[in-house]
Length: 278
Image 1 (cartoon, rainbow, N blue to C red):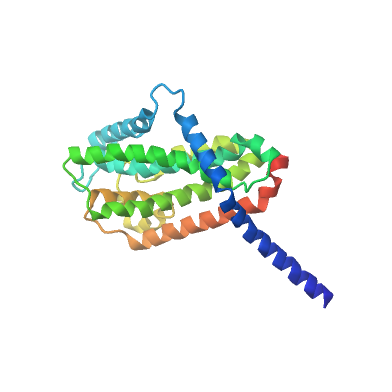
Image 2: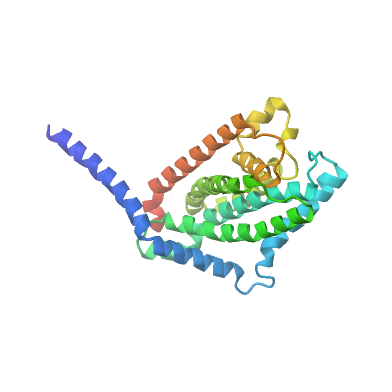
């Protein structure tokens, strides 16, 4: 009887501790805002071209992809100007790749804070997303300019990009939390992150439409969550006539939820060891 009561008390304490953690996360929201603002200032402080860098990277990639896939390979675009097809994909892709990279390196970059004071460690990876969001908003201005240049005005679908942006952020956070912990334990994982983003750029439909993927493999192609995000952005921004491939989108959403849940679980499970291992 006493053992049963003791077990019940342990379970109650564990549940209350989990609840307190997320209350603590809210209580430390000022720290999250401070870290996010600090990262934004550091990103653009003492740089030669400042925020222009947020334009330059996707713009240069768009030019290269447009030449290789549009002029040389001459891939079909369903009547959409090729620069728009590529840049509409670069928007979510660079947001994801930047956020994923920053989250993966966030714990090591803030090792001094982790080893000295207590706060919910989840604050650190969450704060890094703000920088990628600022870059995204700057690049979005260029996207709107390109759309006006090509005579394509945004439709009411435009507001759907909020959902797909959240999907990209959840993907970056889920993957980033895994690699943030692994970077603390095994420092050579920091060399794997750039490799993943480099390969991901080519296996995601950035330079082409996912409709070119053979029908037999199209559903499995959506195991890459960024396929749904990129095609969703094109659907929302360019008003493509093709409808959303619902089975693939549901598969991608399932993958995102699984990544985010498992990333949070692994991060919370190992969080108490960061100060000793970092």
